[in-house]
Image 1 (spheres, rainbow, N blue to C red):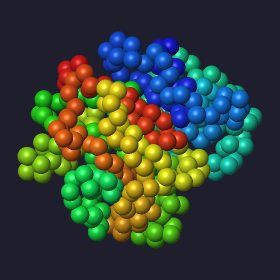
Image 2 (cartoon, rainbow, N blue to C red; image 1 turned 30 degrees about the vertical axis):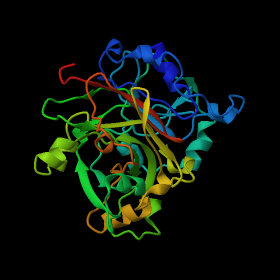
Image 3 (cartoon, rainbow, N blue to C red; image 1 turned 90 degrees about the vertical axis):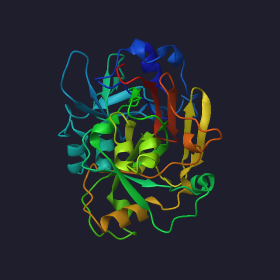
Length: 341
């Protein structure tokens, strides 16, 4: 577990271990002995060791109860909220409780701060959303590489909750999918129930942000009659994590860099400022058609560099290691395995 804990301790956040993850020996931990990210903030700044509104779900060693905690920005310190406050151990229920984040931060200075233990087993930051809604072709550079015109309105799709997997969990290369692609995306977590919300009020409905990989069976999207829902909803095709960062810690969500690295090669390098339809518009648009609820997830699109549009194309296969990063939100590492691993 020491290698996994070292991965937690970096200035962007931390990846996690799913309670149902495969044994560590199967995940390629030799590649993870060193800190994968050089800290960008000096360790002398003590505020980066203070747990803030970066939320995780986890299980203690030898326990079976899901718990909720906050971790510091460098991933070394944590506070368990579910045993020290009235906070629910379930992330969706916690969001529904509508805690005041300023009060929570103020109260945290009086709570016991623990080290992030090596035997901690972290769960998905959110594992039971009511909806997972994605938007296709939402980056200018993505449209350019596809040789497509800029869309006038967003085109939405859905993924199902059973596709969720963790920030260090395996992605299964299902035999039914022959052309498996990747796409790192900023995921928005809805904080309150909303319907017919105006664009000006839309950001008040956001709870926070996390990283998502929109793993996608391109052959089902295109070659099998446009079965987008099936191609995007296979089990393990939605890695999420490593934490949910409250919106108060992300002052400019429209200027965050995004990266995907496959087997050490950088495949995607974009920035959220290149989104065609910004988060406020996406929430406004969706709320005209449906009620958005606490814990719902909106995937906001992926920048250029997906495997299908490389020359030659490059799809994922068993043995590949996919690393996903978004500024301020953390990093994920997912190994692609055969469906029976």
